[in-house]
Length: 336
Image (tube, rainbow, N blue to C red):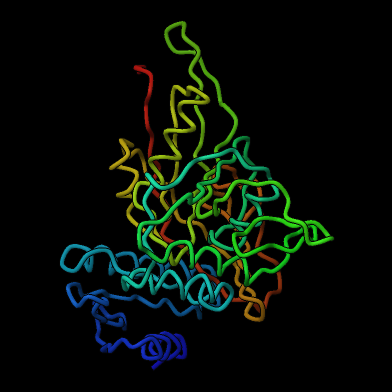
C-alpha cells in the first residue's frame, strides 16, 4: 500500500467510514460507501513519482483512460493527486468528506449576492479554491442570511474562528464580521460569506456588424464542507443582470469533475483544452507549469492565460500531468 492510499484510508477510518482496496484498470482505488449508505464511491489516489516529463505524460494518459472507464460503470471517481493532498490537506479532507455526504446544507434562497473587494476574494479563494485567486474584474460573494435548521452557519462561522484575524489584523466576531482595534464591531450586514465567484473583463470582437462582449468565469468556490444548493446559478444570474454580457465561457478542470454543473446552467461544451505538465517540488509539493498551454495553470494570471517556461537543465523534482479541462460557453446573444 502506498503512503498516499494509507493516509486517505486512515482519514476515512478516523471519520467512521469502512473502505476496501480494489484494482480498477491497473490502478489501486479505494471503494467506500457514502454516509447514508445509498452510494458507492470510487476514490482514485494518484501518487506522483515520475522522474521525467515523458513518464508523467504516459502515467497521465493511463490514468485518464482509467477515469473514463470507471465513469461508465461507477460514475466519475474522486481524484486525489498526491501534491494536492500534501499541500492543501485541509481543503482536500473537507472536499472528500463532502463527497461522502458529510456536509452542511445551505440554499440559495436563504442567501444574497453582493460585490466584494479584491482582498476578501483573495483570502477566500486562497483557502477554498485549488488554484487560489486569479486576476479578474468582477468579484461576487454569496452571503448566508438565514438558515432553516441546517448547520451551514455553524460551519461557515467556524472557518472564520479558525482564522481569527484578517489580512488587516482586525479580529473577527462569531459571524465573520470585522471589528476594529477597540473591539467595536464595524458596520456590516448580519450575514456570512460562504461562496465567491469572479469574472474577467470583457473580450470584444465584431460579428455581422455587432460588437460581442465575452467574459470568462474565472473562479467559483464555496466552503468545501458546505453544499450550497443553487449557489452557482444565483451568482451567475447576478453577474448577468449587472453586466449584461453577450457571452460567458469557463473551464471545468477534469481533476475535479466533468463539468456537469455548468451544463445545468445552460453552458455547452466546446473543444477540450490540452493537459498541463507540472514540475512538483517534493519538499513543498508546489506545482510549476513547465509547458506552454491554454489550459488550467497555477499562475496568478488565471486559467485562460498562456504560460511558457522551460524544464531546468538539472532538477531533483517530480513531474505530473493533469487531465486538461473542458471549455464551456454560455451564449446570451445569438451570433455565429
